[in-house]
Length: 213
Image (tube, rainbow, N blue to C red; front, side):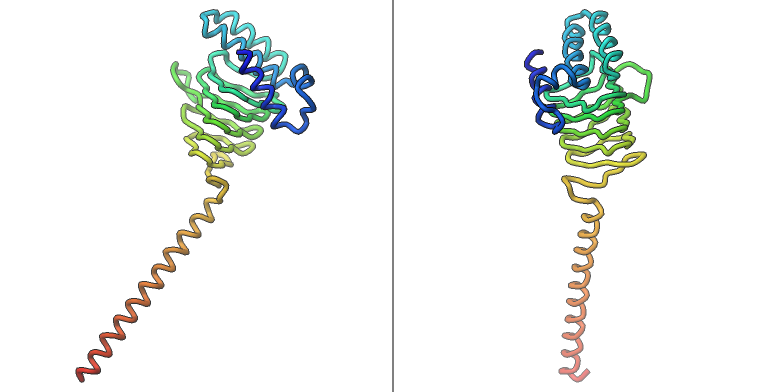
């Protein structure tokens, strides 16, 4: 647990240019305080002391404005920037080195028990005000734009924006550019085929002329 807290602290100092040093980050950053409280509450939750775990989680929510259910599974190096209004549901799973901005909801769309919240891969960025709702995977290195509403799976390396969210980039390359390149490639192939057909027709015409037909 202590190791994870150190990793969380290092992630904030590394990613946030406003973080002057580890001391001020440790004592003043609400995002770090919320994650630190989660690490404690999750430990108690996993050791069958759920009431104490929920007490720690609720107290942290009151102090920081960030709600993280103690049953959620969160990897190392989580950076919650600003943080106010962030909600992370019970069956949420978050990979390593993810970044979450203010007013983000990782929520569910059903009241049934079981897995109902999203799973974030490693190095995922979720922009301010985004809502990721449902039991599906957001792939490694994916980016979710500010204010987006994500209701279905996001591939590795994809950038999604809008309501409902749509993929606009994969691995930094615009989807529209990929479509244009494909159309251009098909057009070039058709031009070559048309040229070959024209050459064949000329050849037949020449043969007919030679035979005197």
